[in-house]
Length: 204
Image 1 (spheres, rainbow, N blue to C red):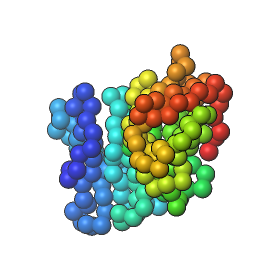
Image 2: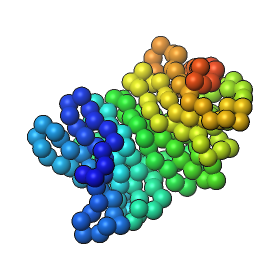
Image 3: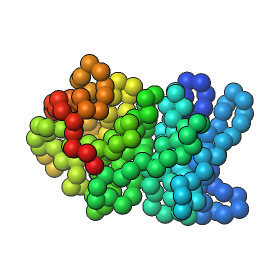
């Protein structure tokens, strides 16, 4: 393993190495610090490499799969299901998943001409801007700086966005009693946006 990007409470380390037979290929890896075993995550169909960026204590791993270190596509991996592609938001062509919680909800960034932060939950991908209703002064979709980089088990999301023309950090907090897509009501504050929604967000 050449790069480590995350670790669980049980000592699973995720990251990437370089294929010793082909220096153009990234190899997504999980290293078990207890047993000393190393697991290769593989790649999405038609691609040959991967980088793991996030891991949950429940064993989900997320990252990007690519061909010869080119543009990536986001994935989620589990020991039981292997590597699965995370659908991109509409209008985007590449991306990476950066973090995942114990429920398998993942966040990341997709791209076209701009950076588009996304949430993946229960098989559906949402552009994060569609979860917000009153983020006045904030821009998450027409710049190259926006991101979603972390998600907690309570559904809180952190990242960056543009506010009044400058880059700022944000925190979005799920304010429904039970965090389920379809009952999303998000509050992004201080670092971020103020927003409430009590209906299913626009699906992408």
